[in-house]
Image (cartoon, rainbow, N blue to C red):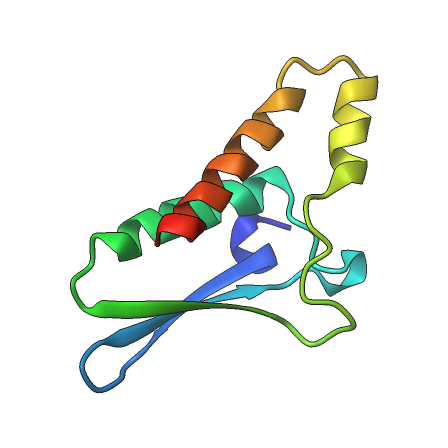
Length: 104
């Protein structure tokens, strides 16, 4: 899967501005965020933050039993176990995404 099937972006027209919609789409793993999703969401939120027509953003989950289980710790664990030097990138980028959401 690519980031753009694991997380979906759309805009809905509204009065006084449009709504940005982010849909988490990994129901099989309780919509846990992997690194590609984090990067895609960060880029889209930065684009929407600079777009005058977007007045608000909603983050939702595709149908399933969870909104979001948080970060995909299994994937992070596997990278750490394999001594992958990019293992810490996920945590850095995920915390950056959290900051962007907080300030949005």
